[in-house]
Length: 68
Picture 1 (tube, rainbow, N blue to C red):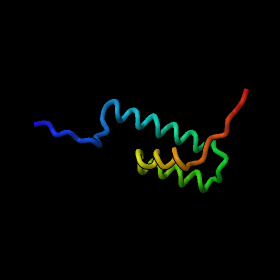
Picture 2: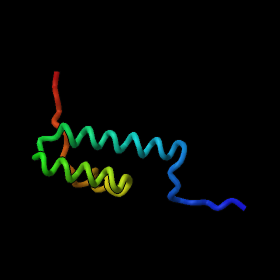
Picture 3: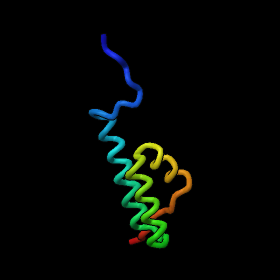
Picture 4: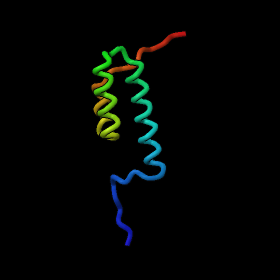
């Protein structure tokens, strides 16, 4: 019998979470927040990949937009 696990992070789902977390980390790095705040946001996203990303998406620092 195969058990369905809703929170299983394998295959394509894991790659999507990884890509979103990398995007969040790059945006945190490029933001104008202080170094301490950047570190805390980065740790949140790294330690709690899904929940940390969702919290960052709602309340996190935004990267600076670079216009050419």
